[in-house]
Length: 263
Image 1 (cartoon, one colour):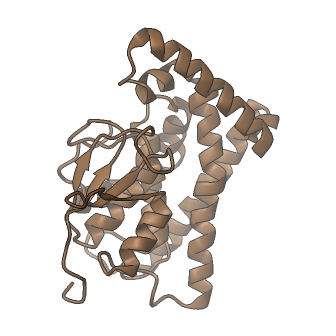
Image 2 (image 1 turned 180 degrees about the horizontal axis):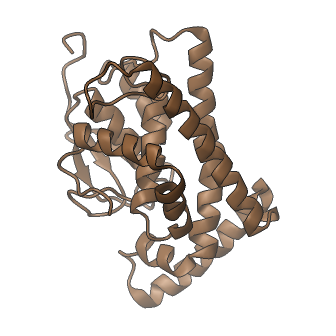
């Protein structure tokens, strides 16, 4: 880590005041994974979509002593900015062209496909649970109004994007197909790393170190396992893909031992 730049104070706004716990957003945990595996110190704060520069969670203050403080938004853009400034490792720098493409494909599969299926499961199928979690800081009478606006916005967004045009059964099939693919990658990686000590982490692409794909996959696995607004996805992972859960438990033990683990 000697090649990294002097460390400014980094504050990660996760959207919820939940010290010692994962939040339900996969993009928050993805970013925390990158910070922790780079040994980059940071502190957590709640924040809100209303305060974030792009109206999204997560966002990050790079130096709160500045006036105004510099705020970065969008997990991928935050990672890019921190990497360019030498504040986190460039974990994909040594990848071959093929593996760079595979890494990008895995991230796109999760962030640009699975994410919409999760939005449907949480905001449409399990609306009240998701509303009361996402809007927990909003007083109850107002929460009903804001929640309904969010519901209508998500219905419209999912219809325009395409997910909303599928049946629930079709969406379940797509979700299972994605996790089957992830499970297959982890199976191959495990075979490539049979010499590792029992319980040690192995990685999605089979290399010695994690890549950007690992951050994204871990973020989504943790999100599924802790979210109460996606019970079907949680059951699917636990019952059909124990290897994926076991992989996440290894990562949790190595890099998030201070956080409560999922049940």
